[in-house]
Image (cartoon, rainbow, N blue to C red; front, side, top):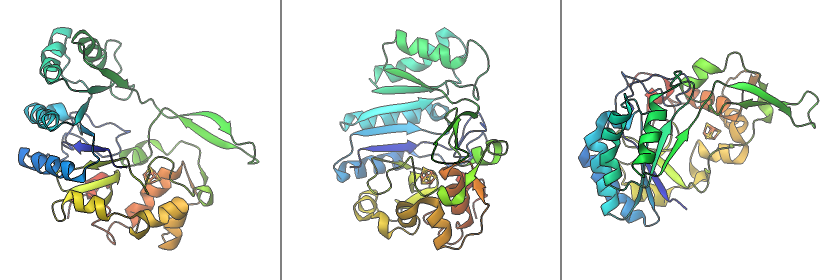
Amino acid sequence: MLSGIHFLLTYTCNLECDHCFLYCGPNAKGTFTLRQIRKVLQEAVKIGTIEWIFFEGGEPLLFYPLLLEGVKLARNMGFGTGAVTNAYMATSSEDAELWLRPLSELHISGLSISDDSFHYEEEESPAKRAVAAATRLDMPVSSICIDEPTVEAIADPKHEKGVPVIGGGAMFKGRAVEKLTKALPKRGWEGLTECQHEELENPGRVHVDSYGNVHLCQGLSIGNMWETPLSMLVKKYKAELHPICGPLVRGGPALLAKEYGVKHEDKYVDECHFCYLTRLALIDRYPQYLAPRQVYGLEEK
Ligand code: SF4
């Protein structure tokens, strides 16, 4: 059951992390307007099963008044609310509190703060200051931590050589494929037969962006909500009829590449690595479902 809508409030970010699966950065475009936010929230009500509205990015606090208004509107409509930030604004403990107080006064239901070795290397990171400030303000706060990928173990004794388990929490899509996959061990493509992270047949959440894309996974969309209303897209979506999700559900990235005759390497780090590169190869064939191009590191046409 679809219960969450996650606004990619903006693709713009003050940082340009190697592990970013959306290719966000200071030059990335694509920010919601207030009018667009209202439209999505009205559609969220029509869907009838939505309980949560999240605001993410990019860095949503770069557009702070818009974030506050979005949270306020969503709360007034009875939704639980959440936001994710890298806490760039927490230049001191006092400033962290100054920035977070308006969100706390709106009684946001959850605040996630990215505090990982990719974002910050200093001991007293802005993220740590922000977590402490949010705690003082009695806000429900958690931190997200992504580390440099490393081989943690060799699992699966059924395989002669075992299967490497990559730790650190990075997902191999978007810029993470370009920047992080080179030195990592890889597995044969024939074994990558399942999507391990998304419920493509029965999604619990979607991410929406200001271009109108409704993502099931980053850059894998069920359609454009500025062309067909979001509630209709959700109602009509059936994984088996979707040209990308259908093969992914039946046989993962291996079947997706096979069905479309996509040329590929013999080995990949994991399912997402293979899936992302196969989707990239199909982007001009299915531009309405594989969008926006910037999530694939490409210029918009
Ligand atoms: S990249 Fe593909 S395999 Fe990975 S979570 Fe997304 S849809 Fe599933």
